[in-house]
Image 1 (spheres, rainbow, N blue to C red):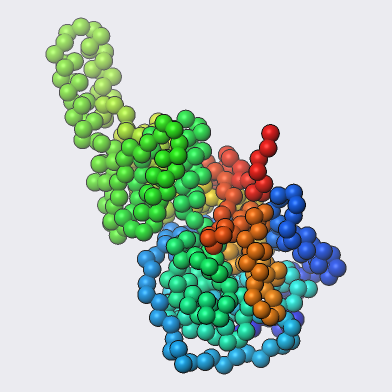
Image 2: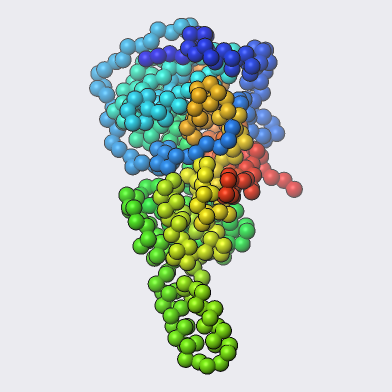
Amino acid sequence: MPRLSLMSKSKIIPLLAVLIATLALSACDKRHQLSSIFGPRQDGQASSIPSEAGPGMALPPGDPALQLPDAQQATPGDANFTPPAIPRMEPDVPRVAILLPLSGPSAPLGTAMLNAAQLALFQFADRKFELLPHDTRGTAEGAAAAAQFAIADGASLILGPLFNFEVEAVTPAAHAAGVTVIGFTSDKRVAQDGIYVMGFRPDEQVDRVVRYAYSRGMRRFAMLGPDDTYGQTIRDALNATVAQMPGAEVTRVETYDPNAHDFAPVVRRLADYDARRAALATQKRELAGRNDEASKAALRRLEMQQTAGEAPFDALLIADGGRRLEAIAALLPYYDIDPKKTRMLGTGLWDTPGIGKEPALLGAWYAAPSPEARAQFEKQYAEIYGAPPSRLATLAYDATALAALFAPAQGTVDEAAITSPQGFTGRDGVFRFLPDGVAERGLSVHQVNSSTSSEISPAPTSFAPLTN
């Protein structure tokens, strides 16, 4: 397997020397920086992961770390197989493994994340540790084999893998060896003792945007989403959040086949269109039988309407993104769900350029990390690699930056340091690992505009308790 080391940077990508020359601090300054930004603080503020961070990148529909694919049975390699170890360059230098799909259908995403990890590696050029990439092939079997190689190589910390079923596959070997894992999935179901997940959690996004909508007067909530694991996660999160808000209720939930192409039937049901259409016809017949001017005027007004009454909700949470979101949104006005009267809500799947080209989504709200923290990272990545990064690349960057602190040369990782309640400030803003292994993030609320999205409720900058 290839090995990336902070002690052999000149052998990897010469172009990165430009990055180091322009961004690196002196060794003394950076040691001070690392100790101050990663060490526990007494003021309750989050520690900061230094970096550069361009415009917000898309959360691609179907992104594996967001879709929560159904878990598969892990198939570890032969228990008697012992992978050959890679000789250490220096015995006192910690080794960190990063497990990514570097071949197979998800290779482009895995490669982008490895690129981001290299940027973090060079950002900490005076912090000695070795980064060992291993290919999972995007399968449970590949992830299990990659973990065996990593452990045999002497890794004291494993970053990745990406998919939830891959994390499940590496867990037995990691537990047996006492090696901590920081996975990139958002599926909190795979988090456990020594196994952390730092992906962008959909339930957290739902809670943030629904609470904001409630603060702005919304009380009746509805949800439309796919009949799959992701849709169920959104539904459960909506129910849990609304249950905590006095006077709020979930009035309608509709789901559809995730492989469907025609969303008209489900949108029609959601809108209660047939009943409202029938109510309009009844009102018209009653007014048509009257000869007074007031009735005639009312009848003329009804001729301009599709239905009678309003949709049975104030806010509609649509748990989808990409082309399916566009197709669904285009049907809403057709079935008389007026975007001017019903606020559309979304998750991080909406955090993509050009979402405002669908008129029905203008003015909609969604929750996602603040783009400011990752803007310079994306600019830097594009300059070095000639293409914009995947939306998930920041996960690999932040994880590698954390590894500069957490990975010891020998022994186990300090779990108390990982779960520091002050948290850290990374390329997607403030985050921390809770004791159950799940990452909690500070999210902002965005409003969809015609050309871009604007931040209307900023993300917190720390996890310190608010005081008056």
